[in-house]
Amino acid sequence: MKPPRVSRPRRILVTQLRRLGDVVLTTALLPDLRRAFPEATVDFLVGDRAAPLLEHHPLISERLIYDRARPARSWRVVRARRFDWVIDPQSSPRTAPLALLSGAPVRAGFGVRGWGWVYTHRLARAGRPTEYVARERQRLLEMLGVPIAPARTSLSVTPEERARGRSMLESYGVSLSGPVAALVLSSGEAKREWPPEHFGALVEALAPDGVRALAFEMPGDAARIARAIAASRRLVSIATPALRDFMAALTACDVLISADTGPAHIATALGVRRVTIFGPNLPA
Image 1 (cartoon, rainbow, N blue to C red):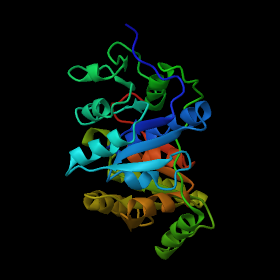
Image 2: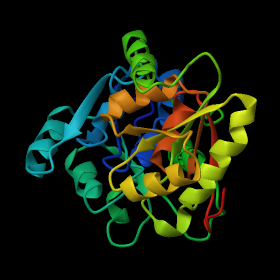
Image 3: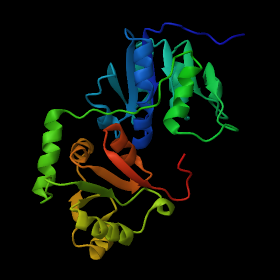
């Protein structure tokens, strides 16, 4: 029996609850869905911590925020919206039941062991070549017959936020009259992190070309920042702002230099150049 299919969905839900980078990468599905179904409602279900990323996004009809404390409440909200399609790139024990309980006749996810059966359209992960995660997620749409364009992620920052971001950097003494390099020293995984002293040496190497460097101090970064500043007193440290403020400040920078981590994907989605320092993970 062929899996059920709704060829012209009226209501579509995209689900990615956690990890900033994964939420950003999932936004690559939105342009494809909008081109294929310009009249459809396209909602995005996201966790509370990553939800600020999706504020003001022009391709999302409504941002739904998952209630971690009361998941049944989120299930009811999703069920009541009578989605035709649920696209679930996360495909986790938390999102798979939600996809099933949605009642959507079309549910696309990855064929993971244990709960992949809930999806009407399943994409195998084992045995497939490594590729850019956003492109891999587009393959969920390809299974449903959606035409795919080159993968491009996107986030939106308002003009007012951009102005606040510039003001924030200037309040820390960062001149915007020349190029500005932003640094993020941590990655959440020690084996992927560049030594702080190397960041300090980089700041010194960039200075003769008039590049100002600042480091966004993420939670737990105080010791790393101190080591980097010991290697270069030119480095300006900025305390971690709220997520939207970080996005705004990043748009005032010319490049982000970091490990393969969420802020790197945020930079790409905001159109900020990035240099990514990879550890043992494959750059693909």
